[in-house]
Length: 436
Ligand code: TYD
Ligand code: MG
Image 1 (cartoon, helix red, strand yellow):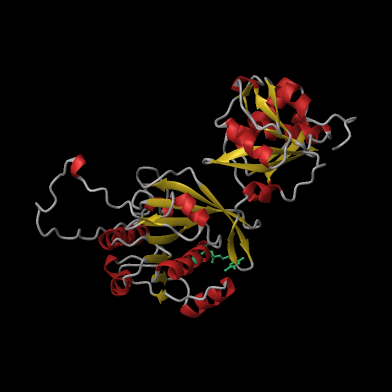
Image 2 (cartoon, rainbow, N blue to C red):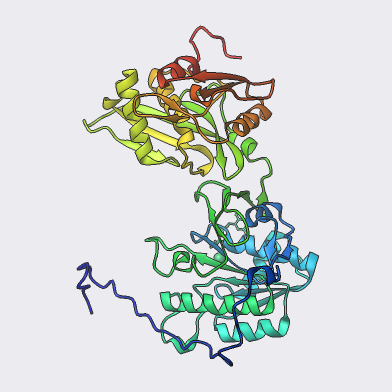
């Protein structure tokens, strides 16, 4: 059918072949068990020799689990997986790395670049899943990698590799194999530009763990984020930096993200955000310039566009800043994305600072959600955020008054503020105040 009779879009039909289910030898082989009688298996975790990855997985990879690592092409999935493979091979013995995208010499070249020696690391360049599984069977590795799920296929399915049917069916087979053999399996999956089709999204409900490797192409930082985890929390992130010789763990991300900050800069504010349970200090920059052709433009890089509009509206209405004739660009440095409203106050400060051409106190961080009447609302885990700011040497922190009594390290002064107006009054460095 060319056109969908439901939504009237053209060429939106996707062929979906259903493969025969694996046959059951006996229909009675799997009776229900009382919960208290169930053995608590599956909990043996293989700790990975890469702390940031361990953190995101919740302390290691569970045996027999299927872990999807999704991300844009070129973001570093293969690099990460090859590094993990080599490290695990060194520590635990055999690892199988199956590549459907690169030839063995190509992988070898990459391995050389990464400084990977590769004892115990077995490479297989193959795309037919049945062949892959039977080879894995023979090798019985302690960890298997499939790079990528879009490249492997089952010939009996009659559709091209990477199609929704193939990707789904192959993932199910791999899941089955992982569980049967108690071997953890990592699969890489590309996120396609227009989102869903045959990308990792269709697999999220099948696999045990979904991690996304994110970052901007121009920035060296990569954030590995847990999206689903059947064996732990999805609150954790791992931070890496892409270098000449592969991905390097960043164990002090706040410091890394702030390293290029100019203390004197106008239109820059530091915000203690929370990535999962991990406090992370980031710099938010704003630039306001007079609008050239009547219609003011707003650009949000790394922050939510609608929140930028909201904050701009509040600054206009409650503080009287004439932003209606200004273009506004907001940028989170390091290529990070900040979704939480806790960054509102920082965004507002950066915009006000640029508009008034007055710097923000360089020793100050700001946290709080901005409400429509210009009030500041409290955010979660304020004390952890403040502690991280203190750890990095900041001496003042704007916090919402409604947060009530907070305990904080001695080195940092908490400044409770009730409204955005008040916060901007305190946060923008007075011109007569000499810079520290
Ligand atoms: P890759 O792991 O191939 O991405 P994916 O598998 O997600 O498609 O990453 C490729 C990019 O990483 C490529 O643009 C070059 C860069 N890179 C480095 O900067 N340093 C390195 O050591 C390696 C191996 C790659
Ligand atoms: Mg790749």
